[in-house]
Length: 300
Ligand code: ZN
Image (cartoon, rainbow, N blue to C red; front, side):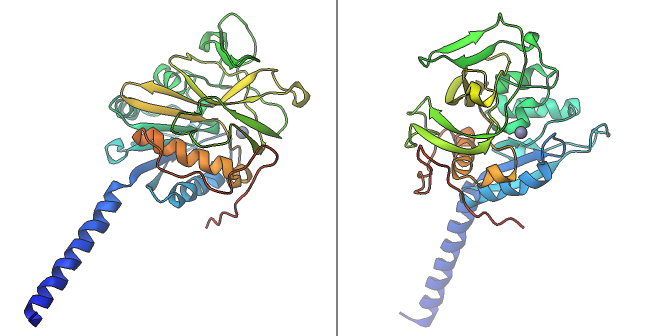
């Protein structure tokens, strides 16, 4: 081969490499985490959510931080056309009408939504958002917000629109077991049917429209831990238009985001919400039934 041909061959190979690497970057799930208001430690948890998603290797992650409570929201506008997935680490003021419409259009047209922990406490007065989360808590919710939804002792879904009572509650934190209720769903496939979650809040007595809900995981809210005596849904999915909405109520604060089951479930929920598939393997450090497992996440 002449040196000229060599040069051409090398240049061609370089061009191919650039094309391949840019294609793989383009293939990543473009994600935006919305935060800025929450009755939780959003300033602490958002960097862990970024780290958890980036560690999966299939997401690019931006953060959109809203104005503070009571401030002017007219200039807070997320360009949802740049994203495949929205992660809600937000529990606060309503957005401006244009942004709310853009968000609904994003989900209706097939965008993914992952609602994290107190994200389902937000927006009590926004009907579309409540359809997307199916069940919510606190925020002035009442019987008028919708029925309770839980699983009875036989694992049958109960939708109770009759009972008055609280909307959103949890007892003291404890290390509760989580039961997989949809083992063939891509998010849950391959996980042990029961595994031990870290010390965390177990959300109970949630209410909402509860339409078209698939319950992926529950925990028994044990009365010994001031629980409801029900199997409470903690991870669920709802279709909204062409969009896939997933609510994952685990992960109260930074400590819970170091628990392997919290990490893995967030990664899998996020991928499925964005693509309808889960390509990630279940890692070897995923917990079994007896005790939670943790990772040393380093966050700047
Ligand atoms: Zn909490």
